[in-house]
Structure formats: structure tokens, C-alpha cells
View 1 (cartoon, rainbow, N blue to C red):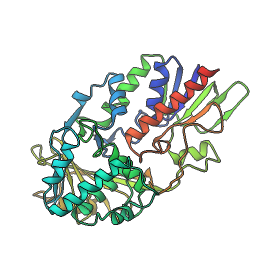
View 2 (view 1 turned 180 degrees about the vertical axis):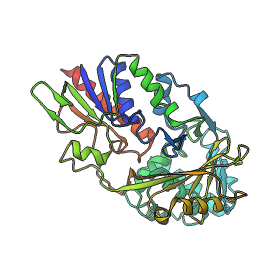
View 3 (view 1 turned 135 degrees about the vertical axis):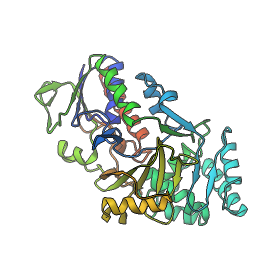
View 4 (view 1 turned 90 degrees about the horizontal axis):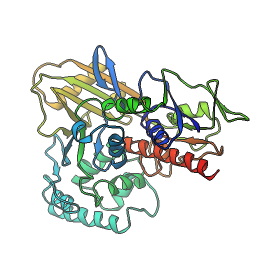
Length: 411
């Protein structure tokens, strides 16, 4: 069966790998010159950087499985560390290397800057969420949910709200509480050992999946048409017409803003977006953080990631006044917040204006199946359990491929 996959981000890659592994002939179209979409290397002024800072967790089981499947060893390519959330205001919650739920219990008990009463209240709240299987009576904003649950103290300001913004790329006042509950379910609330671990790429994001997938697919006779933007697809008597070729089935794995142009009438496709900014600082090679992830409170910055060899990446999620700051002013403000000595070092700023969909309460989202029997969708916005994450993208691609092949088997 000849199948076209349109879009070579992590969702399209996952779909293509699954299809090829199960015997389909696949042509993968990607507008960029390399695979990876919004999670790949970018060469800027001769430097090789990621086109945005992404955080992976041990809970990303399908992402890790896909890496192994295409010959990318997670143990070699990722640093695995017990999760620790600390900020520049003295807060710290560190999870030890204990099986769940003892890791979270100990982390809460020993959290710095939090009263014992708040720790106990939060432990009971998390236990109640587990009893209810992290299902809320109705969706609302994260801020309203936390308020109603009595989460109004230090942990809200220094843990829940920063985690919400990092995971959903939407501020707590607007973000979906139910989707955030799903994130907690599969991370802090997961019974799986290692689910909360922080996974940091040792190199670029392209080394995790895009590069090895490109090699894996090419050696298995898949056609990779990079640098080729598909502008139109249409059904025909013999199948789907894509760039002058006929395909039995098509999986469209493009960003939601591009889907509307390819497939008009998709009323459930998100149309509100949130930006992400990443500022890479090149400090002297010996510059490090005590722990490679730090939250920034009270200023412009939000999260700081130690990428090694003196490179610190400051991440800015969601709309904010940072968008109106010039690159130099933004870098200088972050440099001062980070309290690094010396003058402003060399830096690079990457801004993605429509990085993710706004993860709002009760947001309508499309499924992988469409009104056309041989046309399927993939992309993080189609995986309704999650916000816009790499794991959601991978799972959506696998689901679209499975649906595509399931219908073929039935025939």
C-alpha cells in the first residue's frame, strides 16, 4: 500500500516509522530541509542550536520506545536525573531515587520553604486526585482549580503554576485544569518507576529522533522528500492526489495553522496559539548550574537549562512582556536575573510566535480520523489527553498509522 505522510515533525516521523515497519510503502513530505519540525537543530550564525528548548520526562514511554526502535540509544543520548524543582527565591523540591509514591512523599516532606501544614494538605490533595483517577467533574482554568482545592500557598507559586506554564505553554489563569491533571497523572502521580525523571539531551534534539529516523527510513526504501511543501491535496477516483502522485491513503501531520489551508472546514482545529522564546547564552566552558534545571521567579525569565560546555538556555513560555523586548534588552535582563558574573556574554535569541496551541479549558480538538475514510490526522493537537508535547506528537503519529492500517486490514 502506497501511503503519503505530510509533515516530518515528530508526529509524522512516528507515523512513517510505524507504517514502514508494518509493510507499507511510504513517502514522507517535509517543508524544511531536515526532519524534526519544531524540535530539531538549527544553525544560526554558524552555531548549531536547538530551535527551541524542550524538556523530556521519564514518562515519555512512546518517545523512548521510538528512539530504541530506530537505533537511537536513550541511555547514551539522554542524561537521566531525579527531578528537582528549585528557583532563585530559595524554593526547592527534590525527588529522591525511590519508587513511587515514596519519591513524591519524601520530596514534599523535605521541600524547602514550605510549611508542614501546606505539605500535608498537598499530599492529601494529590492522594484524592489519584482516587478520582485524575478526572475532574468539569474542566476549568488551572488557577480556579488550585484555588478551589486550597492550593494557594508556596507550592502554587513555586511549583504548580511554573509547571503548568512549562507543560501547557499557557498561563494558569487560562490553561485547562483537566489537561494539567493528565500531566500530573503521568508524571508526579504515575506508579511507574522513573516517570518523573528529567531527561536532558546530551547533544541536539535532532540526534534523538529526526536524524536516526531519517537514516532508518531511507534504508528501508521510504522516500523522504525534504524541502518540499505540499500546498494541495485532493481526493480522486484512484486515491489521493499529492503533488502529482496518487496515494491510497494520506496522513496529514502538519501544524494546525497549516492544516486549514490543506483541508478547509476543519472546525475543531485550534486557532489560538502561544509563543516560546529561547535565549542561548555562551558563558565560559566551566559555567554550570548546581542542577541543570532552575526556575526563575520575579522577573522576565521562567526556566533555565544547563546544556553543558557553558551553554545556558533561558526559556520563555506563553504571551508576556518579553515579546515586546528587543533581543539585546531581553538577553541583558535574563543575564542579570541569572546572577552570572561579568558582562553580557555572546547570545542567540530564537522566537517561535506560534509554537503551540493555547491549551484552554474544554478546547475542541480533532481526532486522527476524518470524514474521509482514507485520510488521517497526526500532531500533538490531535492527542486530546496531552498539551503540545513531544510525547503527544509521537503518540498521535502512532495512533494515526494504526488507524490507517486497521482500515486497510478490514478490507
